[in-house]
Amino acid sequence: MGAIAYLLDTHTLLWWWSSPERLSPRVLSLVRQPDHTVYVSAGSAWEIATKHRIGKLPSGAAILHDWDRRVHEDRFLPLPISAGHARKAGGLIHDHRDPFDRVLAAQSMLEGLPVLSKDARLSALGAERIWD
Image (cartoon, rainbow, N blue to C red; front, top):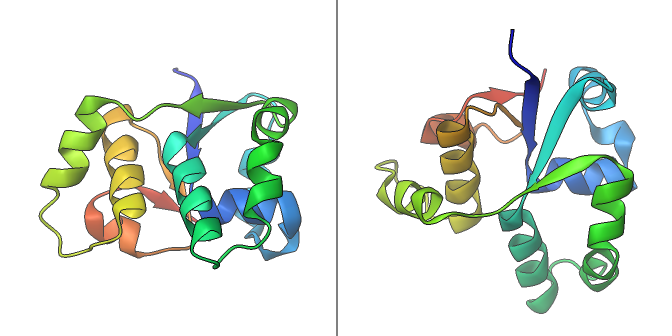
């Protein structure tokens, strides 16, 4: 049996760091398992930086400043955005315009990583999603 691995959606990562009570019990359990591998997409850093820049996430600067340390301390692994991820994201047929969701869905599909997310739109894009 292969390793058990997941990809965090951006809101899941932010809630993990600031409001873990907002996470579903299932997601909390999966992330806390020491034998599970949890990935964080470069797309999440991009999304947080963008939302901070446009004023939707005032805490974004502090999150980004401590990004590497926090990811490391939580034993999460970074997942870069490859050209393959970008091609898949851009080619997804579903009419969903959020580039961050599209990248996460593409990474989930190409890397075989269920995404831990409350957002059902990721399922509509074709990603395997776990929440409840």
